[in-house]
Amino acid sequence: MTSFQGKVVAITGGASGIGLATAKILASRGATVCLADINQGGLDDAVKALAAIGGGKHTAQIVDVGDSEVVTAWINKIVSDHGKLDGAANLAGMVRVQREIKDETDEAWAKTMHINADGVFYCLRAELNVMREGGSIVSAGSVAGQVGFVGLGAYCASKAAVNLLTKTAAREHPIIRVNAVSPGATATPMVAAMEAEYGHEQPTAAACIKRKADPSEIAQGIVFLLSDDASFVTGTVISLDGGWQA
Ligand SMILES: NC(=O)c1ccc[n+]([C@@H]2O[C@H](COP(=O)([O-])OP(=O)(O)OC[C@H]3O[C@@H](n4cnc5c(N)ncnc54)[C@H](O)[C@@H]3O)[C@@H](O)[C@H]2O)c1
Image 1 (spheres, rainbow, N blue to C red):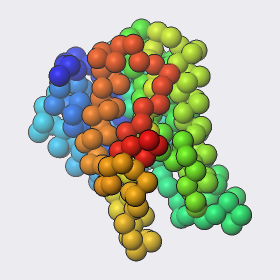
Image 2 (cartoon, helix red, strand yellow):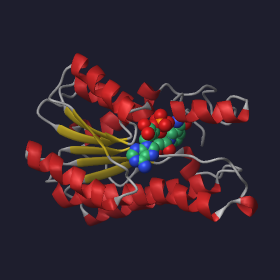
Image 3 (cartoon, rainbow, N blue to C red):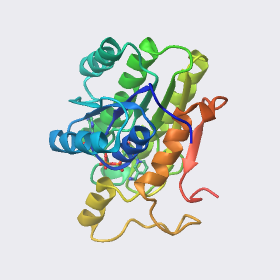
Image 4 (cartoon, rainbow, N blue to C red):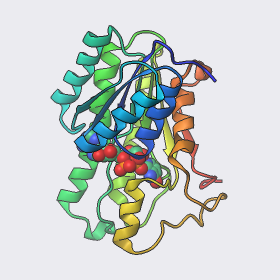
């Protein structure tokens, strides 16, 4: 296992699900983790959990990834507090009530694109401006950014945008590795909320492994991409989807 001792890693969406699972692994390997989220209670619990695990002096801050000035100020503050930013995981995201494209509202389309696509763009821009050679950025795409899902047009489009922003950033900044992960259905509060709303489990029949991932299974892939073990991996979208696209 590669050590993250002395490394500073920023994580959006760090109060819950895949972001929190990623933070826990990084803390266990010695990193200083800087969490951002819009969920204050979740951030408070997360920082306590990370402190109990170990690593550096972890921090948490309310940051709405849809606010570019707030995102830039947060990333710049990390660098002024810690002297550097080694890694970043852009994992904040949301999914809205499912509607087919013919019924989709302007508001739901705009909100989904704003948080999932604009939000990753704001983070990437701020991170690329401060990271030094050897830095690594990982953003959350989705299997829904690679294949279409009925009723998830806005979400699919927002995640496809993450994939191509990732590839473009990698070409523009070869000294920094920039990748995305493409998770399949994962047992997080986001999916639990969808399941409660629709009254049935998220279907996994399309995958080879017919179950939801545990968030830690996605986090392991993100941590690999953040680590020096992935020193020749950039500009790619790694599928962590139980074979959904096999
Ligand atoms: N769970 C899945 O099945 C799945 C599958 C593919 C991709 N993803 C993606 O993985 C990422 C993590 O999702 P998750 O399943 O862990 O969900 P989650 O809801 O457990 O965690 C997402 C976190 O993002 C935060 N967030 C939402 N909007 C924000 C904003 N504007 N600014 C800052 N933080 C914000 C939430 O408060 C939450 O803590 C998301 O980008 C999601 O789209 C999830």
